[in-house]
Image (cartoon, rainbow, N blue to C red; front, side):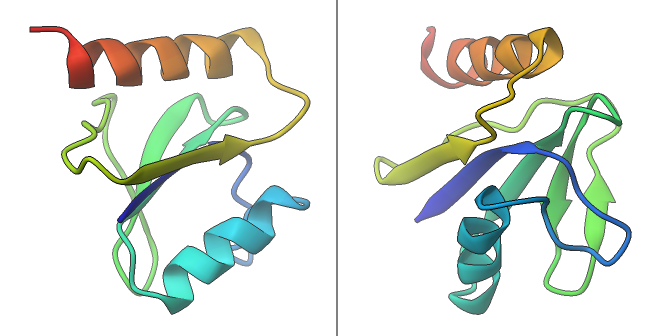
Length: 92
């Protein structure tokens, strides 16, 4: 029900590489979609039309059914983004 991606958002609004296929499918299915862009070092949320920068905020997983996917070339900031996402979502 929610999709969390680590990758890079391209100028055309798609996500780079094979990870982008999953992101595009999430868009088509109107699923909540969040991408941590490693190059911009920020989380973005798909609004249905474009990407909204979350302004340094980390999203929160709020549904028991979620998917996480991403690049095989994960950078240190991408690893930190995952750790923060899980910490914010699951620690009491």
